[in-house]
Length: 243
Image (cartoon, rainbow, N blue to C red; front, side):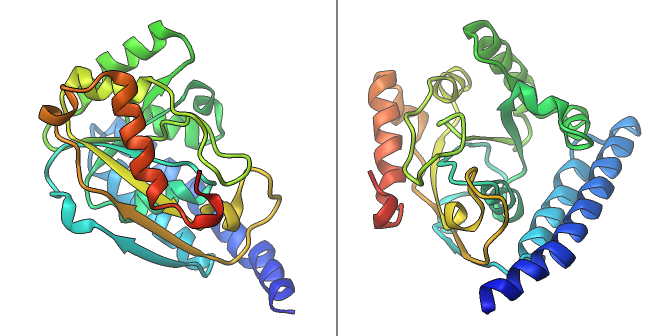
């Protein structure tokens, strides 16, 4: 009965509120960008939108490892991608202002796509040339304490287990020379995965691992670095989805 009541609530209350909030936030970001603000409004307003989405969905949040990061330091955050709520968890609760590296096709999303473009998020395609172009954009963007958040799997998991990592995120970190921060997300797959047609009430958690400094990873090959980050993130995943 509890699950049935939650489904009714999610469709009749949470979903309409989310749609309205998303449109309002996207419009605010776009308007602010035309007024010359691509930094503060495009960060704080979506941050509030993300927390609002989680709270109206009646989900609980647990955070670990916040002591490992400095709010005004630039990082490359690398997180596993379990489901849709990964975005709200990272946007809502990471203390550092950051830009997303996202797939090119997301530019076409109604309202959200133009808001992301106007707020100078980094779009990247599948080709090496596209990755190199994204790195060049990031070099210009990641200044004055701004960080970058990337899902190195490139897409959401189908079964809760992590997919293999793509090289683009690690090319970016190496080119720019920022500390890499592995992040483990749990609960998002069971809450709203790519296989689901509705949201389930759940517990979301984000574990921030100790940063890997440029001095550490410059001694590693790309494959070794990718494996180290993969193993670190995987170590924090709940046992049923751990590889």
